[in-house]
Length: 111
Image 1 (cartoon, one colour):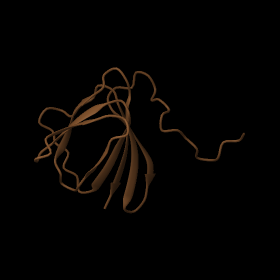
Image 2 (cartoon, rainbow, N blue to C red; image 1 turned 135 degrees about the vertical axis):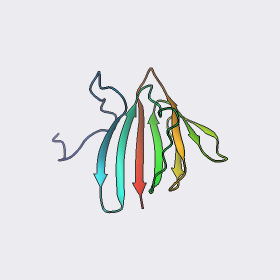
Image 3 (cartoon, rainbow, N blue to C red; image 1 turned 60 degrees about the vertical axis):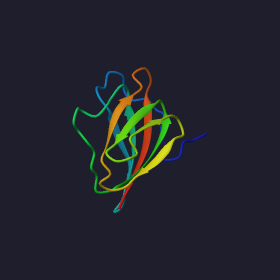
Image 4 (cartoon, one colour; image 1 turned 90 degrees about the vertical axis):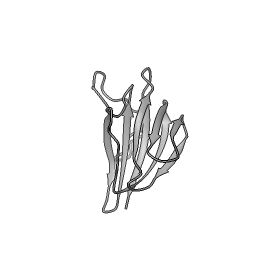
């Protein structure tokens, strides 16, 4: 069977030996961006907080992660299928991702 043009798979692995987190922009339009993020043992640098101007809806497809928020949400543990909405300027950071397996995120940013 012929593959449709542009067909890809969210679980295609990143090349071995690529250091750090790998982000692929899957779709970008005026007010929306969809990214696949692959992490393995990655985390935010000490003292660093994301403080974005966009909404972010994120779902964890595989692996495991721990996020910390700068408000009363505290720390959230994510496993496959878990998703959450992060409003604009909601300070957050990645505390931990699974060091032994790819953690695959699908993130939708919108204004």
